Image 1 (cartoon, rainbow, N blue to C red):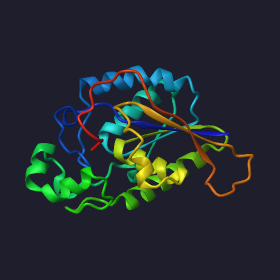
Image 2: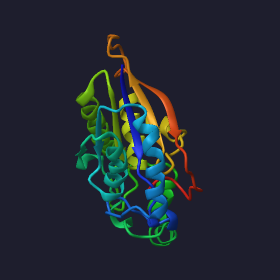
Image 3: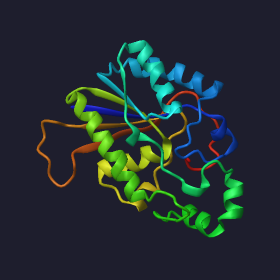
Image 4: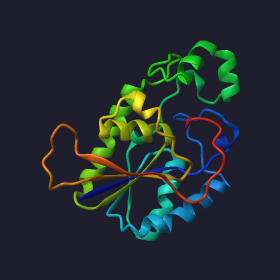
Length: 215
């Protein structure tokens, strides 16, 4: 059995302000660092065999808290970055709604390709799904922790599970420094699915109100 833990980074000032991060390299704030510090012992108790992280600081520094306890190196993978939000990056969501009303309405309605230079959900899922699978392949039969981002996490998990966008919209986003657990029974022959199963979602300790979907 291979266990894959998909861990969202800790809180940032842009998360708190409802500002679109996308692939902008925003650091953790004090709350985010505390979230990572508190979550790290819980994940260390799972005895991970490998840690992989997005190269953006908020995810890399979250992973570093776990690495400090386990002694494992953090492998960096740029494919684990958040969805690219095109012209919205750096804007508050209130500004987005004013400046891009049509694209914002489509995004809120779940359009997988709303425009404004935003990465499509199909491309996002394929990018993150491939990175998740390669991370899992580092320790077949073991446990791998992947530190990434909220929107990317959901689409990548959906890609591994074979879920379409309509199903994923019914699954809540990961809170900061919470995680999803997937398992793969390596001894069972694959049939119609890739073999991954959802075992837990949005597990974590320190929470704060979520303003909107992960951006």
